[in-house]
Image 1 (cartoon, rainbow, N blue to C red):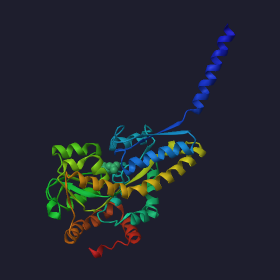
Image 2: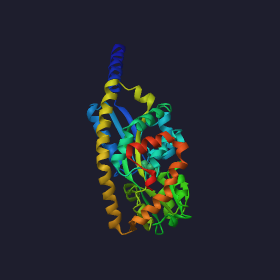
Image 3: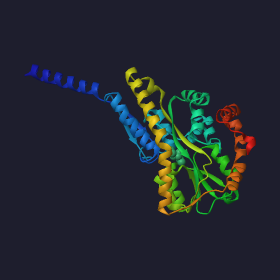
Image 4: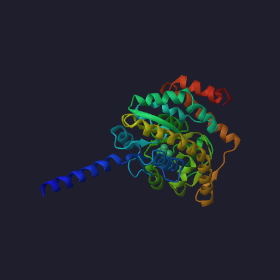
Length: 334
Ligand code: LMR
C-alpha cells in the first residue's frame, strides 16, 4: 500500500514537472489604444506570429485600451517585470529619462513616412535604442501610427484660433512647447482620460492621428477637426532587458523574426488605417472637417518652427541636424 502511494505520488510529480516544462512563456503586451488601430492590429499580428514561430513555446497576451495599465503605470510595470512588452508612443519616453525621443514630436519635421523611416533606421534611431538599455529596457522596433490632426469645439484654421484653448497633450515637453507656441494651454493627460476630458470640457481640444481620434470616439465630442498634419505619432516596441536576455536563444531569435514581420505589417497598414478612420469621421457628420488653405498652412508652420530651436538643448542639436540632413528639411524655407 505504501509503495503504491509513493508510486502514484511519483507519477503525479513527473506529470506536473512535464506540464511545467511545457507551459508556455507568457508575454503580457499592454497598450492603451483600441484593438482596431495600427498598434492594436500590429500587436495581435505579433502574438500570432510569435506562437507560430516558437511552436507554442511563447504565448503573447495582448491587453488593449488601457485594460491592464494606463500610460504612466505601464512604463513602471515594464521596469518591474509585471508586463513584458509595450509600444508606447515616442512622446512618452521623457518621464523615463530618455527625453531625446521627443524629437519625433517636433512640428512639421517629417513630410511623410519615408522621411520618418530614414531616421528610425539610421544612426538617430540606433542611438535612441542604445539609451534605452541604460534604463533596463530593449528597443525592438519602431511602429508607425501617423500624422496628427487637431480638434476643438471652435474652428481652428490659423494660429490665432488656438489662443487660450486648453489642449490635451501626451507627456512630452516638445508638445508642451508646440501648444504654447500657438498660444494655447497644454494639459498633459493619460490617453485613457481624453474622451471624458473632452466631453466634460476639462480640456477644449486635442491632437492625434485619425485612427486614435476615431476609435476613441473623440470626434463625437469635438465639433471641428483640422487636417493640419503638423506632426507625427509613432511607437517604440520595448521589452524588459533582463526578461529578454533571459529567454532561451532559439525562442528569442524566433521572437525577433516575429517582430520583424509584425513591424512590416504594422507599418504597411498604418496609412490605410488612418485614411479609413478619417473617412469614417467625415461620414459620421459629427465634426466639421477643416482643410487648411496654403496661406493657413504657412502661418501654422511659421508659428511652430521656433519650437525646433527652443527644444534643441532638450533633444540634442546634433540629433536635429542629423535629421534635417536625412529628411532634407530646410528651416530657411519657412
Ligand atoms: C496618446 O496618448 O495620445 C497616444 O500616445 C496614444 C497611443 O498610444 O497612440
